[in-house]
Length: 396
Ligand SMILES: Cc1cc2nc3c(=O)[nH]c(=O)nc-3n(C[C@H](O)[C@H](O)[C@H](O)COP(=O)(O)OP(=O)(O)OC[C@H]3O[C@@H](n4cnc5c(N)ncnc54)[C@H](O)[C@@H]3O)c2cc1C
Image (cartoon, rainbow, N blue to C red; front, side, top):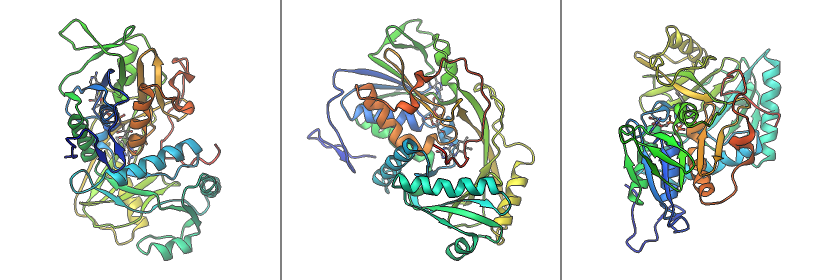
């Protein structure tokens, strides 16, 4: 899938194969988008990687994600990670890997929603100060730019060009295959437990811990339970979100109505839309995978309002899990000697996987992590409320 070079120096886009990880053995637990990327980035640096997955590759949240990707973040660190990820999606995508379709991203507030309108304007200003290509438009200008969009009730919008969409399942499968091509061992249908001091994993039934120089836990919504069982508490809560695909053709833009809390993107089968953050903690081993009654109806009503020509004949809807933290920032980095983790992406884990996987791999090999995402910034027993992931943040 991704080509190898017999000379030992392989480049995928600008991904060069080096050997600064040679001699280290690392277990990555969870083959979602983040774990598969991290496994690939460790393997291409010469590390001996084993990627453990309790089901099949991409069978967690990554296989249920909407695939909306953008660098339109108001916070400086988020903008940096977003930009790195978009650049990497562009570089790695292709006919033999996974599709990445460039598509402008629009977020807006409706007339009368003054607080959100202020946030939209401020977010554009903040993005521009971080070098993100984003512009502000009023409803009239937005309507001139995107004719399919009803904009007479739009107060203010932000439009960003560093955006696009992909198939999250194909991205994850591709990165896992690339990890395997770079020498990683992938063990699917293998749910492991974590052991610490020294770091290792226990394959249930074996009764023994397999030692590794480092263990990277990228187990998505299971991360808290997995590492709590090893005596490490983290403040993270899984929660349900929902999405649907309708068979009405749609081309652009991807947009987020911040007043109605609904997003849409084009999809090979028509249009994909989502909302429906449930602000209650879900059990990662027992949750409803179907969309709730009324979800499709309410989202379709919003979509029809925004795109008057919208008239689908079939709709399929589903649910999946996202993960929340007390401050809305993810937990990425070393939590205990040789134990690393990445979770708590608040609905933005897929779009950040290309950069987070790479950053995490480099951290395992000794580089400094991302301060704002340091998992040690909490005690682990904080109580907090789940807030929707897709909000406009302009104040940091
Ligand atoms: C409906 C929906 C829409 C979304 N839309 C977007 C979007 O448009 N853009 C975006 O950026 N994000 C989106 N997200 C969020 C995104 O899906 C997640 O943030 C992202 O997929 C997290 O990736 P991950 O690799 O951390 O976790 P996951 O993909 O959940 O992977 C974790 C893996 O760990 C495995 N695992 C768990 N426990 C063990 C164990 N003990 N041993 C071995 N393996 C284990 C699981 O089986 C799973 O495969 C959406 C989510 C949903 C549900």
